[in-house]
Amino acid sequence: MNFHKKLIAILALLPGLAFANEGGHPLDKAPARPSLTSLQNGAKLFVNYCLNCHSASSMRYNRLKDLGLTEDQIKTNLLFSADKVGELMTTALRPADAKQWFGVVPPDLSVIARAKASSAGTGGDYLYTYLRTFYKDETRPTGWNNMVVPNVAMPHVMWQLQGVRTVKMVEEKDPHDHTKTVHKFAGFEQVTPGTLSQADFDVATADLVAYLEWMAEPAQGTRKRLGVWVLLFMSLFALLAWRLSASYWKEVK
Image (cartoon, rainbow, N blue to C red; front, side, top):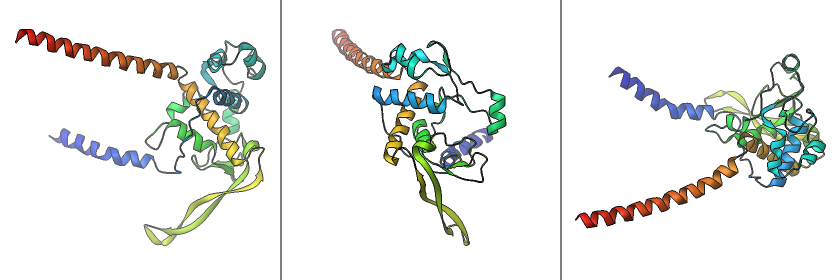
């Protein structure tokens, strides 16, 4: 009996734990960018801004042909850290150097869009919000901080596109203790403009996130299309089985 009571207590706590994990900066919904043009732009951004420090060791360059790119286009525009299109997407950055410079080894991004999914949102929502909420913070070793990951080790690699921003905080009464004040996020303040407007930067970020989602499962489009046909076949089979059963039992009766 004690075991059952403990099990019920644990199950009762699970919803609360799920909401606790949602704490922190709210996630924005990542726009759907499924077109080949968006995915190609996302692949270009990934190679130029992410692959310098991060690897995608489960992805080969030649898989980008699925996005409508030719082998010559891949070699000319995207093949910077490898010699052949059949090679894996790895970085030249040594883990020891990364540990020394950033304090941590940058994670592999092959399936990062699936790994970051949670009750707060999809992995795409997490990445879309994370990449758009960097701000200048001179107290950090890299000079940058992030609203989704406070005290983040990663610098803002796309700052030239977005520009330099600082965070605005306001003081409010602590709802649990009115004798104290807490600092609450009140938005960003643009210090210097980037090469893209905020709207264009959001679109570029959405393209990059769309590519990361595609890279986490390149065959997801085929899987979804096959899934529709499988469901249609199973529905037809169930209908035929039902009518056959009705006909059989009619003769028996």
